[in-house]
Image (cartoon, rainbow, N blue to C red; front, side, top):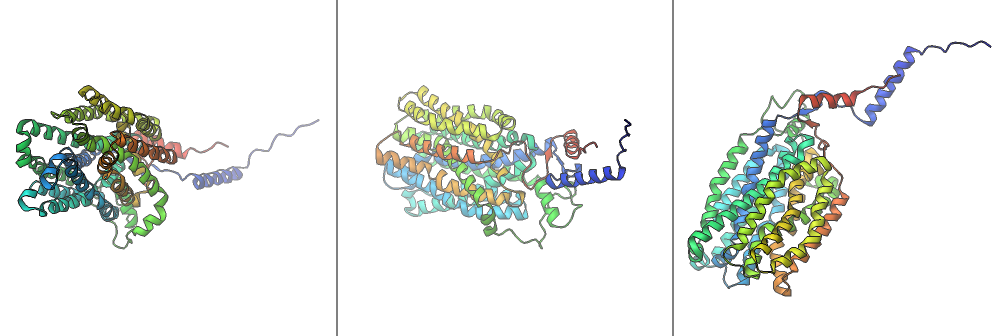
Amino acid sequence: MSTEAPNPPDPAAVKRHRALFRAIKRRLSPRIRRSDITVTDEATVRRATKAAAVGNAMEWFDFGIYAYLAVTIGKVFFPGEGSTQLLASFTAFAASFLVRPLGGLFFGPLGDRVGRKKVLALTMMLMAAGTFCIGLIPSYSSIGLASPVLLLLCRVVQGFSTGGEYGGAATFIAEYAPDKRRGYFGSFLELGTLGGYTGAAALVLLLNTTLGEDAMLDWGWRIPFLVGGPIGAVGLYLRMKLDETPAFQKRAAELSHSPDASHEQSSDPKLSENVPQKELKTIFAQQWPTLLLCVGLVAAYNVTDYMLLSYMPAYLTSELDYKDSMELVAAIIAMVAMMTVLQRVGHLNDRFGRKPVLLTGMVGFLVLTVPAFALFQQGSFLAVLGGMLMLGACLVCLLGTMSATLPALFPTDVRYGSLSIGYNVATSVFGGTAPGVMTYLVDSTGDKLAPAYYASGAAVLGIVAVLCMKETSGQPLEGSPPSVSTEEEARELARSQTNEPSF
């Protein structure tokens, strides 16, 4: 029997097979070229993060001042006494949140059209102006009903400006940060949150201790609000020194039909005037499932956040009769403890994913909120501190993760607008109303644990929302190019996308 040697492969056939494979591969997984990958500059990312975090600290310094002076503000601006004044004070606190969705509707799409930097500078100016003006308003005993009206007006200005703050700041950091470190850099935004609250609590504690109750009611309460003006000017300066985010610049260049436009060539891009503005109806039509998911996440996050950072000092003072600023000391210790571990949480959600860390925080609130409130009833400083640390351990899981999670829900061209709308609707309905609702629940039921039940219910909503979301850790933002920390990472990523098969 004779055997014939196999025919050698036809070079033309091999070439056709390779071309077919490349076409299929491109169809299924578009190839990433080195030029498509953004290599971040560490110093630039840190400057951008600092500018966004300082603005966020300014926002929460303002809200923290109001929360920690809620009892005093009730006495200065509203008639009546006791719980009536406190409820009126928290009602004014919640009123500013009613206009936050309007601020999100205005500033969000504007930030997608003209840039993140300009809008964040504008919101900073409005926020600082509103805070400063509160410190100038005469008391109810001086001008009567005009006093709470002016307070509400200033709070409306604050609320409207804040509608564009968080969504823009979170988007700003997320679009600057490399994909594998977005959780770490995003955690600095919430470091600003805790820094603002801690600064507000420390300043109020200092004034309460040095001035006394009479002086605080007379004029001392004005000092923290007047300090807000200069702090806002510092944040504005830092933000104006930055360039636009690489993701927005790339999007602007594409829509302007300028493929040669680059991060280095332009520091102040604008979308072409020929490009139609994203209509709000388009955002709602295309993004409504993700908007609902965003609302669920933010609702649970904000109820627990405002409960611990805004409502707790007033609850301990008004409902449980704690004295000598014990509640402020415990709050400051708890917030400083959270600040020390916040970046570690950012590292953890970069390494293990956003969903496991968020679930840990939500389940923690579901299980531990009632025991923590039971500790508050014991009447001792150590019990209060222990309860706050328990809740703080749960909250820090959300604080260190949300600012990287929420921007990744939406594509670049509608990210600022969609996030601002979803975030502010949830904050308006659930976050800003949380202190007032909790005060009402205690007054109407007589149950000192009622706020814990409300927060536990919010945690259940959060668990459902987390289970429904996709994991985005380490992945490029939708509609944005991949972002890495080093040139070597960029080359390795490009090589991993262009490996060809052997035939």
